[in-house]
Length: 177
Image (cartoon, rainbow, N blue to C red; front, side):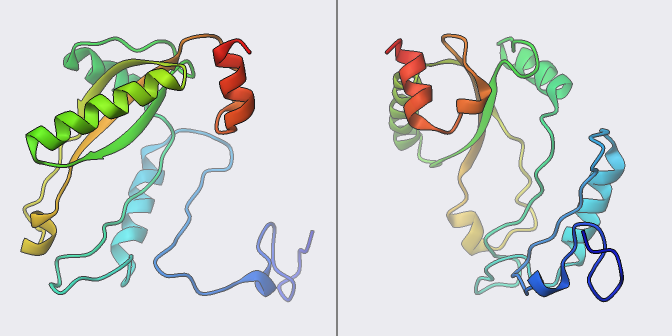
């Protein structure tokens, strides 16, 4: 691995550097959970002049955010408040769903999504509405703003995590094939 300044340090390889539109990385390589990494990521996000597509208004764009470890204790508390319990850490999955605001259309989407969850061999544990604050958004963004919810699922049968995301082994194991 390169260690001098002309070749880079650690995992950094200058010859592989390229300009990316609004991308940044802050990581804690030892896996220690810390709120400091959240603060650092939000500071980086705030300081980036361009974080994705810009709209016709200065306060309308395609959004930006951060990805963190699963906050299990937080989810346990919030899901209990929403009326359902979570299994142990690592025994469930969570996803972000962007539903339409129209109640009839949202209901139709939820039925289809719930059926798909079942077809893929998962049990629906519940949904949690994600609190949002659109006070600073432009009119264009507000006009198409979705209803954001988190969906919590668990496999119906024991599942080898290495096969998550690979349809053939995962589906075969769930279906008992």
